[in-house]
Image (tube, rainbow, N blue to C red; front, side, top):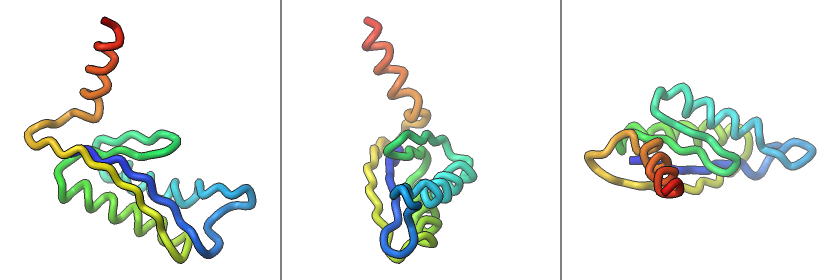
Amino acid sequence: MIVAFSVAPSGGPSASSDGSVHDAVAAAVRVVRESGLPNRTSSMFTEVEGEWDEVMDVVKRATEAVGAYGTRVSLVLKADIRPGHTGEIDGKLERLEAALGE
């Protein structure tokens, strides 16, 4: 499965003076990258690929890491559950690029 998620703190001293929550997001992304699972981060979401239990564990731990930066956490999650398929975090993009090149 691939999960795309976004997590951010609210309440408490979570944001910097310009409203950014980059330190909290960095804590979440650090958890994802240290997991060893295939992942990608963009300006809006982080994607992680693996088996259900391992991906959800990473999302949970990333959410907990963000929780240290506020009294409340917002989590947005979208999942592509496709049993028997791996390498789709790159494969989906490769097929898209190939279709665009046709």
